[in-house]
Image 1 (cartoon, rainbow, N blue to C red):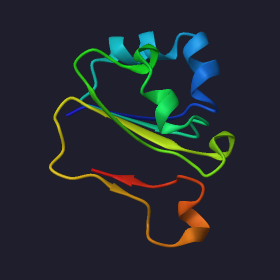
Image 2 (cartoon, rainbow, N blue to C red; image 1 turned 135 degrees about the vertical axis):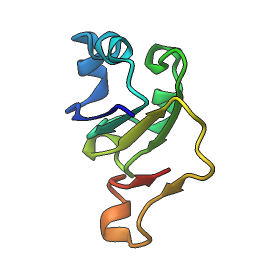
Image 3 (spheres, rainbow, N blue to C red; image 1 turned 90 degrees about the vertical axis):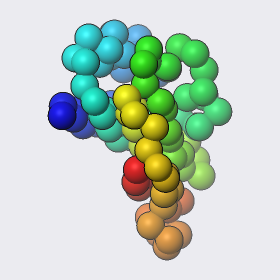
Image 4 (cartoon, rainbow, N blue to C red; image 1 turned 60 degrees about the horizontal axis):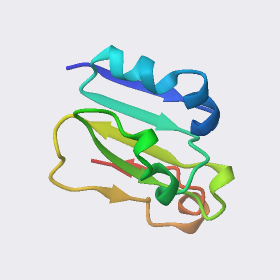
Length: 97
């Protein structure tokens, strides 16, 4: 199993620098992204989809202040978003599959 984890420091800027093409070429089973700085709606855009992956995301109340995303080759049985306490959850810092 191959897993990649990366802090993208804003997915829009990272995508413009070629991150998504690079990720696709790595052929990982699971890709974890931190600090996406994008809403779930923004990440639904086809520009952020990777062929052969399911995409799940957890955004922050203010999207520019956090957010995480998970690309997975296999569809998880369940997705848990948030830890259950506002201090962490309002920044979109936790996603479990």
